[in-house]
Length: 345
Image (cartoon, rainbow, N blue to C red):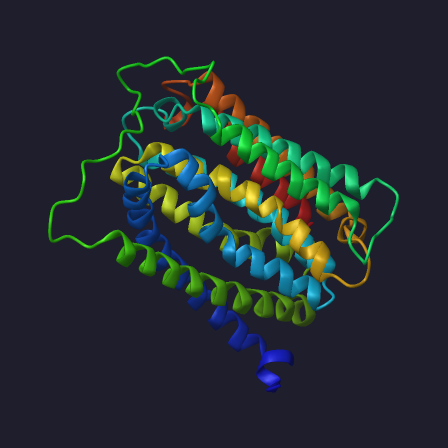
């Protein structure tokens, strides 16, 4: 196999590739927002469910590849911190999207029962991951039983959220609430659904390649600079991991697809939590959960706190808040900044 695929990369090349891939991810994400909004309407799945599952999967592909490659390369701390760091950085994307929506607080306008339930699902997944780290270090075929529990937990949560013919909880409609109403059928002569799916999958392939490149550059940063793996995985890789959700959330807000914007972040976070399962399978040195250092466990707790804050914001639905943000937006920025500084020093 060529050395460029398996051998170390020069630091200069790694920095250049890291920046190039980040730019490419932003461009792909802008287009994904348009495709996601259109396909959500055409499939009849709704912005919340489509955004959390299909859209969340594509935007999480780079993170899945990052975690798998890092774990397979015997960098469990990098793999773990990337998965959880992506969740923290992506949750911060809600605050960024909220800044671009001038009418009212985004969490007020995008009232959605599925988004609330996906937030609960994410808290459960992060809780199971923390429990696994403190459980007995037992593996079956090199995989910790918690990985199967997390996969089943996600599947059960998805069934619960999607199977709701008569919801028992409905958000109060206000003049600022933007309901998820499908657009009218596309006019004749416009691109067909199959063509849109094809472009959607092509962009997904580019995102996968980007994830592999970012992981190799991150490994170079750790080896060449002496930076802590937890910081590199949580902040540098985590930010690139979060770029698709951040950019698509902002683009979706500008298109008026507010429910999709929130769903892409929360749904992507749920899938990023499953990255730990992917990493546990790819890591051959035992349980990935028990390979986590205090930095990674601290980061997991930080992501759990940020998710709790976001869920509180979705429930309170503050119309106007601090500095054009709701209380949750300000707290999300504060918690993430404090977490990143703690990991850096």
